[in-house]
Image 1 (spheres, rainbow, N blue to C red):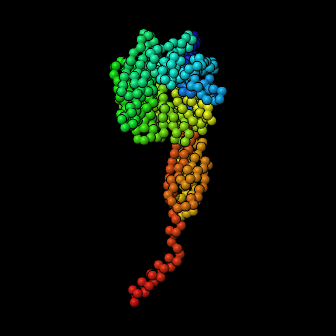
Image 2: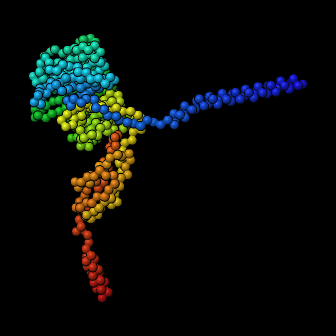
Image 3: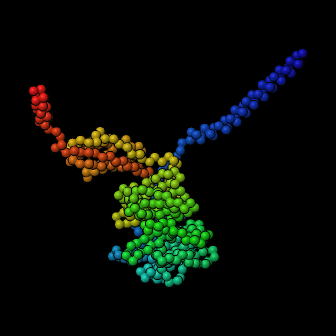
Length: 466
């Protein structure tokens, strides 16, 4: 009997231990599955940042392009005579971001200009065998991995504006587009036109360019075209005669267009044959595109700055905000390069993005006024209610401005005034406008006029009663 009870107790103890073990294993499995989710949910997103770096200090660097860790540009540091005049000499340089090393690609003595880069290959136009002033230049290529230079053209023509993608190099000669295949070592004329051809760009199987036609009455027409190697077909993208500076990435082509008298950036999708307007500032030019990001120059704030638009997030970012003039922005990945001109010198700068772009805090403008109409002199109190702003710029419409956040302003003379507040931070700008109506003091009703009305009313009532 005692043995049986002992066995039953052992079985009960074993059952309890088994249940406990199962519960412990279940709890451990639950923690393993849920803790990463909780950790991910509680993980804070990294704030979006823009870090700016000066790449050159020569004061003579122009027209940068970028591919991965390589920045390439043209430089006239050896093109100055002793008296300060310019002899026309340009050289091509490359800067390796990984090694922080600058390399001179060409030998001084010619005009090596308009460089482009893909992989370890750099191409440019060079007048060493002719003269740019005589419209004679050739296309050259340098391989960074082998340190070898190759002359691509030798046809005594004016070969300029090369662009490279994989094994294909394209360039223009007056009214023609030419292509050289590095794999087959064969060259061919791709397109000919009655118009002058400028600014070729290539991506994959497509080439884009700008055609300029001068009419008999000296009118100028500029439009964008593209050509597909797979279709062997030339297609006109714009027809308004006001578009230029095309760039291409994938099936997207970006360009500037003056169609309404103001310059804005547009995008054309070759897959859907649809056009999208990117900017509305009326002062945008020189676009470039990489993946979902478009960069361009914009003069909306007076100075020319670099802006960026993300096609996936639909966010616009102001990349630069200094008082210098910017030119030729180019983008690759999270890096934007441009030419920065200040006090007669030009250098290459780069901005690098980091963090979560969804955490971008763009400014949202808002303000109130305690009054919107009254008699001169009219003092109005303005209260800023903007979000994420770090800079304020008030324009009161009477020739005066202020950079204070909150303030009072007195309008001395009668009139209608458009008050504008422009707020900004490192990521963008926003603007709001209201109207203030200031009436002339003579429009006030004098006190004696009230007595006249009173006397007329008394006389009327007296006559009526009589």
